[in-house]
Length: 255
Image (cartoon, rainbow, N blue to C red; front, side, top):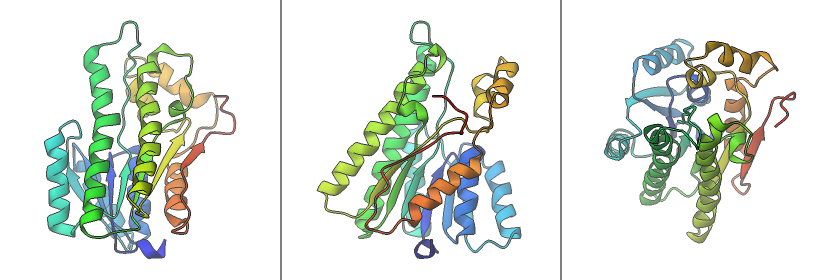
């Protein structure tokens, strides 16, 4: 990770869970991390925690509504003005609503598409353009995917969410191909966790707290740090090695 010291990483959805843990780890390794979310309070608290811990990097909170394309572009403009640009883009932000294909709400489907697919794609495009204009040839774009980006689990509540994650799998491979055609050494990686103990299930089952608790009580789930460690592993790979997809599962998880 030494070669990343002092360089700039963007982590979307950095206020809680996996995103917050990734941001903290990259700061610990000496990176300048721009952590974005709609609300800054938690990122500001995390930035203060990193500073008091004496980490060699710095966490910079930045407000951004990822469902708004203009907001995303304004964020990248601010990063350019303040830090020259992005060297690493970690598309971590994602969400799910329990809306089936037969009776789901259109607004919920659109929200999932806006965050899980559109925001990821816009951030990817803007990050690449940032790297290209500065002749950055060793940048990295990492998409936080899901095991649901590889298999369709028999649960109607998550079928539309699963479709958005299949899109992430296709987008990451398409990105790899386009980067190769562009004759750049910028790398693209998808990280696909299984069950991770975060606030995700509690938000998903907000009206059924018992279901959320059951999600994590049936087996030993992954922890956010496990996913952050996978990010560090991917970034630590030699420049000629492209890790295309990392799939992480709890040992006891069946699917």
